[in-house]
Image (cartoon, rainbow, N blue to C red; front, side, top):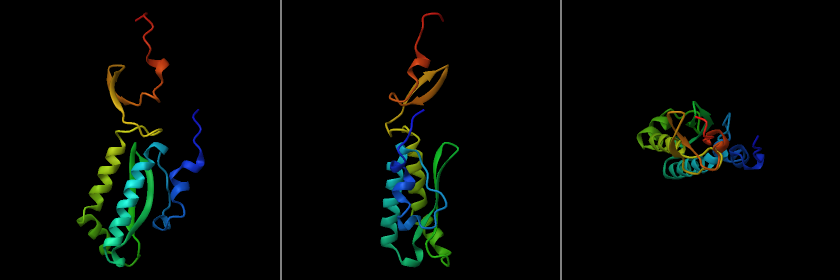
Length: 141
């Protein structure tokens, strides 16, 4: 089994970041941390361009149904308009597009996945992390 260095995790990277102060979970595969980085930079840029009452922060980062999933919330609890403003300003769409882009990349190394036919199904694989011995033709079939 592949052992991942805990110091390279998203939690280790962002646990002390102010935007993750109220975040209940910070987890994504190591290969997708660069996509989380893009989202964090965009939220920082968004917050710096709007009034403090409309700032948003992260509530949860996880993988749900195989998709990088990022939930955010108003940084100031009394701001009900922050979520609507973030949606109207396109932040919601940006986060969703980055999460969808991550699906095209290996969860272990971040390399672009390649489509190939395996067992009569089209699957996306990373050449470096696919179980090569499983798909070797042995001449008996």
